[in-house]
Length: 520
Image: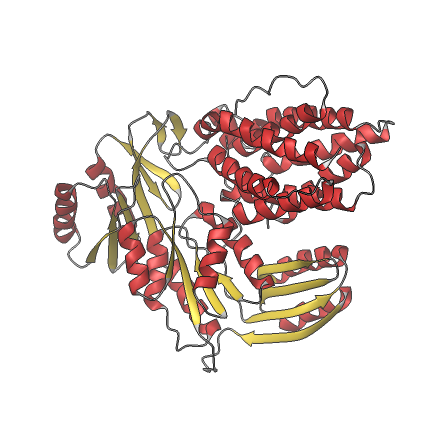
């Protein structure tokens, strides 16, 4: 295997994903119009290929490193983040190999699988993670049986990945009920199939694509008593052990770095235990402990807020509030690179990042890791809707200490219940019953709770449900498809049906979602 072979695999994988993107997109379990796993994977591979194509070095290592760097900065959505980590592991293994044979390929897949599992705080089986692990194990078995050639090892990995993909409905009820396989896993099979075909002299036809996706989200940031941060001198295995122990001690766990130097962050009620955990595995230094409940104001440098937006009016609103908006295009999640550039644009040493979408949280986490390695202090508040981001932005106070500001914004976002209405783009079985293409879907808290034929009626049902759980303010963000008559009717109805609730109608301009609703 040469750099040209590796480059050929990535370009073939990109082209194969381009051909199968619509099919993979259509097989998401969620029937909403922006659940596009295939598109996110394609955009991630396109970013990797863009770096590879400007790398003129004929050797494997530089091409592998370029691919890993491009995928990291171009990762889109949860599946894109995981694939970027797989490519990172593959790139590291191939760069470290003196010669590329079947054994090197097996090590590359193993390291790729390990990187993917580490990227998710709480891995879920029956997803893309299961598929990459099965591929790695099969490659290792092929090498143990005496195979030294590349092609048989990749064939074994591809075959095991396809078998694991077929088993995903047995592992997740949401896939079994829909009668489909995991969409992220299906995309990974397409990528591995391209590698096997490029490595095989006889080539062969691309794998048949059929497949569904389940979101894998990190848990919400929950402010504990103390924020503990330190640098750590330790090897990779020790850093992995520390990450696991800190996950048991607290929340917002980040252990990032490479080789022997690691940056550690955790929110925990027991700061001493977190520091002792670091002492057991290496040498912690530059230790900083901040009491999150303290209201003591300290001298802070300029602070920035980066917000992912989905409409022109909200983008302007964020700018007017002093934030840096990152515009997400219809059906296209923002890339890691876009968020990192926005962090730089904020011109602040401390930055708060609001992803505004469940599928953007993992990408925001990657961007924060990259920015921390550049010297920024970044905290991601995992907002799952633009109304949660607006609530957080409303209480943002740069005169407060950074930690107090993060706590206040996190609380405001967490106290905002959210819902939205859209139109189904495929037939599906939902938590609210079956839906047909063209039906109106009411999504409450990330789950489809209402299916109907009338957009206004579904909005009324969602508003009633959110307000019934207590609230004093309802914010309605109107999309580009919202009709003026519907906006006027809903505003008038809210005044009559819920006279004690303050109503704010905010033009958003977002496509696909005529109404996004938040109740505080």
